[in-house]
Length: 526
Image (tube, rainbow, N blue to C red):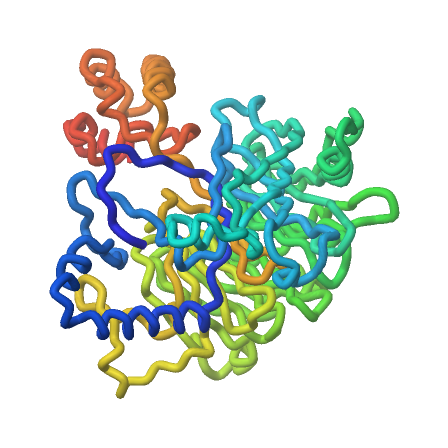
């Protein structure tokens, strides 16, 4: 990232990025260093360096009027798109355009499905998107060869976004696609506490065939899982048994749903063992009956679906809530986890078998300064994974890189004297409140991310303020009466800090109006 001054920061919701190959980027860096050394004695070298963009490391404070701007030279492709409502979860649909199609070249095409978090339950949708004409952007900003032909896919054309929507009552906490090829079955975890199963094939056919409409019957879910008593986030489809789905809720319960010949069947007896909310679930890539769970009780459990009363293995994995886990599809004994304190741990599941000692991670990284929100192994490179955090970073790691304590000359130190880990390859920033990331399984090096929108229009904020005042008027909460006096008479839209259109906490806990509350009222507000 580089720092640039600006008066206006454009917000983006979904990013599609493809990073330049690491070895290729490394050689380019070496060329730059050599050129710099060549001109170091030149009288104009100092002036050139003063005007150059500054390299930014997370933790540095930005000056007044400064913002982060992506360095296009390190991305082969970088596109962004805005959506009407925040889409806090999405998944990538497998297509028929080819496997590992990097050599085919640009422009690229990708299909994704995303669920919205709208202002009202009735306004939510499940959106199937086709993103095409995704051209290579690596040469953006380079005017050295304007007249050259764009044989490498770099064209001055805007990408095309086409979409089809299905009505979805309630916001979508998570959406996942069945991984089997030529099967477009999706599951959504709704904030209503129900899990909905959809057939997206008609929507995809409608995108690919101009004029084709989605049949009325296909606009409704195939099946509704009603086993849960409350909402949840954890969900995963089995990659070894088609139609096998596990879902976990905030009341510690995990349920199995299986596909019959023409419908689905949801179990009513849960897997029990966790003592707090189930945050994430992952099926084993090789064992048909085995899955892993992560919980806010700080544990990771390994389960066999033939035994629901107790987990086969359970370890305390972190000192904070375990938010996300990912099971390596290439190396079946590696599991990665991300916690609420920003810590990422890599586990060798073979060490879980020894009951005499407590397993310890084979690697631990404390780079992120806020909760880890998503983590995923690269589907092609077995040693590479990516993670996103609430500190507005996406980090890419390679475990095959070994730390060399003797090579002190190449150390990079961030603010606070923290050394940048050798395994940290890349940092992407520019989105606020990043929620989820996924590697594209058919386009090597391509990643898609989604984030909540931070800055709302003045019109929207004014409307939210009216809604807040009305809610406080009817609320019996401890903080309602004193806040009502403050807000109705004093608060304007400029006083609001609303990170998410559907958030209930409209005022920031740091706002002076909130700090005026008495201790008990403040605790109630929080």
